[in-house]
Length: 476
View 1 (cartoon, rainbow, N blue to C red):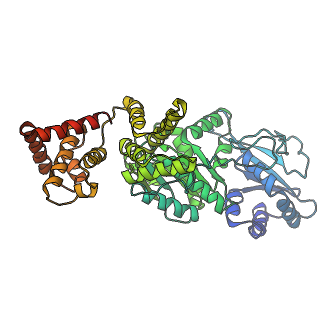
View 2 (view 1 turned 60 degrees about the horizontal axis):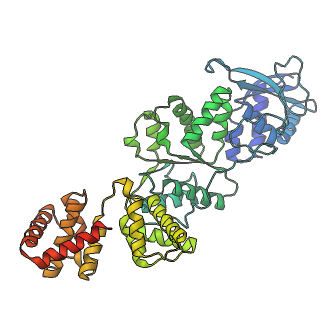
View 3 (view 1 turned 135 degrees about the horizontal axis):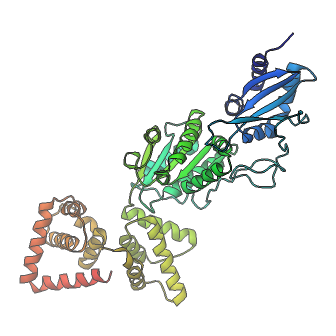
């Protein structure tokens, strides 16, 4: 009785389904197509050489048993592999490869090596010389949740990241897009999620890759006619982390291949984590179909850290490195470096290096000298927070009182002076200055500046206050 190749493969799949995980079945067996059945040899078509190698490496024993059960002792399995040609893959062709329990059939167009140790390695993260495929996650162990300081600036992103780490692919945050300016912790948080997943789910394959590296690998795959291998490699990752996805902008082919990888991973319940310097709505040069998928999950932003968060970051860094600095120095750094965390940590390292190399104790004066050099090339301006601190220290007032609604004369005067210097020494708007000084409006700030100008012309004691404070702020 002649058997139909479709029915034979359907029977095989029924048994395979009971012997592999649902995810493994969906990834590695559903894409296979039965081609023909001749002389007890079942030919199946697989999408790429990588796909074939993976089946041979992980499922060959299972396939042998099932084929013999269906076709008898003489039953054999042969692969037909879709290969890419040199003409933009317009007409992919196939080659036949027997399973490793059978010699190559006569007149086979190509005979491929069956031992992974002997075959050329097609995929970018396979470690040469090893039979079993291993993927290096490329995660930095220093970027963990333990040393990621939480604050109002990053609470949403951190909480979402932690939820994803506890249930990768199983939350509404898929993809999780983390966006924000330079040095605010996007890469740190992405690594932290990957590390947490690896610690909790040892069986999951986690991969961190920069968009630049992904693009270069794709270009190499195009040159070597191995785009199918490249795509299937990425489609088998359980947690894919792409850093700085905005660099895909304008690269149509790279976006196209990433679109297909994204679709496969999302449909099979794999977790996708993306970082960018902008939210999807502001990304230029990206395909709309890709941008729409970025919006499927959660877009969480990282903002500039507040003063309290900056000081907490410095103290955490000091504790980790076994360093002890005077509180006034830590506060000064926190007040002075406001743009991003990377510069903040860089300033701390520079200060310690200055102290060590010059054999000087770390003092506030040394910190001021170092900060002046450190930020000179970045068009530095004094922050409103720092102005308020200097003014409060000068008049021996708690900063909370300056920001309060009290109308006591000495408090009002200190508040007006802080507003005056904020307008003079920063680029902040009047509304922003007022918000920093207890929620005052722009008219109050203007009135304060006029009052200070009038007093310095008529009151020599008041003029001395301003001169002292300006010196303190100008050398800050």
